[in-house]
Length: 152
Ligand code: FES
Ligand code: FES
Image 1 (cartoon, rainbow, N blue to C red):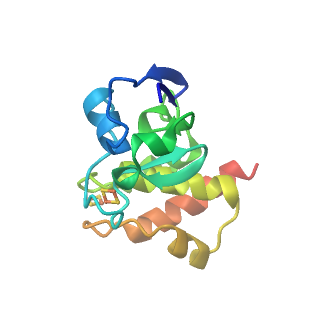
Image 2: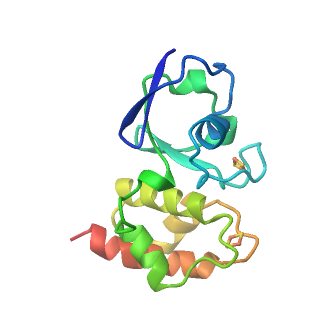
């Protein structure tokens, strides 16, 4: 294992142990601190990133598991906050403390990649991320608005 691609940049990771969780590769080695640590056991979703387009919990994904993969973090979702999900999040003032929100946004963006018009039930079953501030209703409304733009 020598390289991964993160936000479009090929990165040499040969000096990092293959068993290092992707979360710590991103945060500690690459300085991409938008991805957060919450539980460390795949139960909160705060650490969600995309691996080859799929939402993945980076706290329980080792570097060896993402060899050759294309990884997108919140920093790479768009250059300027213009992704439909990011715009809808601002429009609906979704974040409160903000800690869970990078993971929420990455999970929502992945949902709309696979389902451009999700129902309330589909949103609820896909968006299992925990928000201690209780922003769930705003998240649901923001996803519906983002879906309108994605669907155009
Ligand atoms: S920190 Fe990864 S799911 Fe909670
Ligand atoms: S906005 Fe505070 S935990 Fe979700």
